Image 1: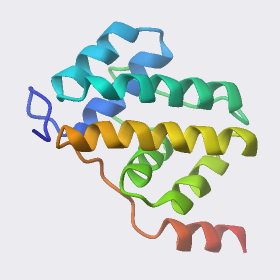
Image 2: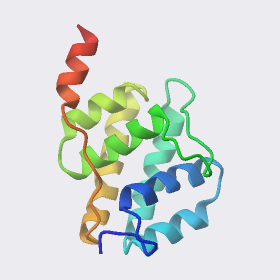
Image 3: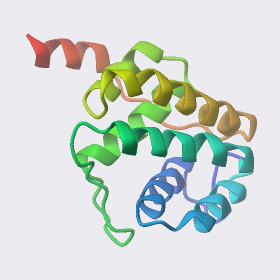
Length: 141
């Protein structure tokens, strides 16, 4: 499949899921993932968001569903999910370190990987950023 029924890429659907989840609208999250053919991704997504929420180092900035701009925190969460889906665990953990306490990082990564496997089975692949390790190294020097 690879695309939502409305023709938008999976990345957009997952962004909507992030925004819907944070305002407590769980049924539409399940519906969106179901329309991608990835209904079995719901459990991993919800567990990931719960872990991020509980382990957050600071308030995570998620926009209203009507916003067209993607916040830095939304971008980071999408990157974590994409990196985890593509087996780039180290880079995903580096991005998670910006958002959650270390003890939450491993759990969030495992949940992101579970969601990624479910999306992959449905033929949906999230984008991955380039140069996360390099970027992290340059920022931390």
